[in-house]
Amino acid sequence: MTVALVAVAGTAHSQRLEEVDKADAAGRNLLQVAFTPLYQKAIEAGEDTGSYELDIVGSLVAFDGDGGFFGDGRIVLWALALDNLGNLHPASVMAVKAGLLWPTNDVVVPGSTTSLPLLAWAQRCADDRLQVWAGKLWPHLFFVKQNLTGDNPVGFMSRLISNDMAARYYSLTGLGVFAEYSGKEWFVKGAFVDAQAGAELDVSSFAEGRWAWVAEAGWRAERASGATSLSALVSVVDDTDDVEGETAHSLAFSHDLARSEHTVFGRYTYRRGGAPLTESGVPLSKPLDRSAFVAWAWNRPFGSDRQQLAAALVYGEPIEFTAALGFNNQYGVEVFWKFRVGEWLEITPDLQLVRNRDNHLEIVPGLRLRLAKTFGF
Image (cartoon, rainbow, N blue to C red):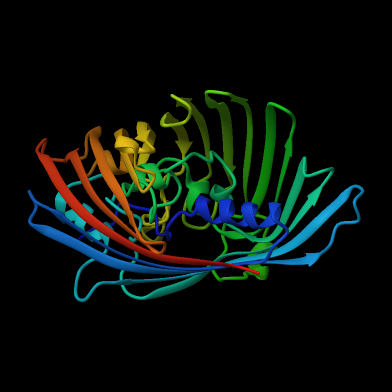
C-alpha cells in the first residue's frame, strides 16, 4: 500500500500579503489573478509530476481610518484552484515512488481541488504599529516571512522550504485571530486558529475548541547596506481526532549583503509529538521531527533587474513513523534561475538534488511558468 508521507495542503503564499501591504500603503484596492503551471521529473525513479495553480487575491478598503487609533480596515480574500496536468501524478505520489521524505513542490493533493485559504477582516491601528486579522486564516502567511520562502509559485519549489515539514501549524487553516505589534526594530506576533476545521468555514469545528497557537518575536534592522532580521517562533497544536498534539520551535534569520543585491537566510524547526493516531491522520501529520535549510539569493544577477538566481541546502530528520518505513535523514540542494519576460510572465528552470531512501542521489529538474496580473483601483 502506498502511504503518503506529506501533509495535505495547498501552496504557501506570503507574497500575497506583500501585495496587500503595497496596496494598503497606497490606499488602493487590489485584485490579483495568477496562473502557474509546473512540471518536474525524478530521473532516478523515472517518475514525473505536473500541475497548475490558479490564484485570485482581493483586498478591498471597507473602513476609512479616523486618523486616530483606528486606521483603515480591509476585507482580504484568497481563492485557490489546483489540478494535475493531464494524467500526471501530484508531487506527493512522485515523492513516495522516488523515496523522498518531502515533495519537490507544494501541489500534493490528487485531482482537482478548490479552497478559500483566507477570508478575513484586516484592521490597522496605532499608526500602523498594530494590525489585527480575524476570520478564516492560514497562520503561516503571517509568520517567519522571508524572501523566496512560503510562496511555492514564485520562490523555491521544494516543500521543505516553501512549507515546513516539521511544524504542523504551517498546513492548518481555520477560523481564528492574528495580531502583530511592531516597534522601531522589533516585533511580536500571535495567532490562534481552529486546528480541526474540515470545511471552508467550519463553525461547528471551531466550537469544539481544539486550537493551534503560534507566537513569534524578533528583531529587524534597516541599514544603508540592507536589512537584517532574527526571530524565534513557538507553535502548539492541540490533540485532534486523528493526530496527537505537538509543540514546535523555529529559529529564522535573514541578512542582506551588497545593498540587498545578495541575501542569505534560513530556518530551523524542531518538533515534539504530532504522530498520527489513525490511518486518516497519516496524510495530516508531518513526516519530519527536524527540518532546516540555509539559502542564498542573487537578486539582480549580472546587473539584470529581470532575473533572480537562488540556491539552498535542505535537511530533514524523519519521525518514528516514517523511520519505520525505512527512511533515514535526508539532505539535498535546490537551485533556480528566474527570468521575467514582459510584465506578466516569469519562467523558472529549477534543479533539485536529494539523497533518497536508498542512499541514491535523486535528480529532479523542473520548469515553472507564471502568468500574473495585478489590478489596483
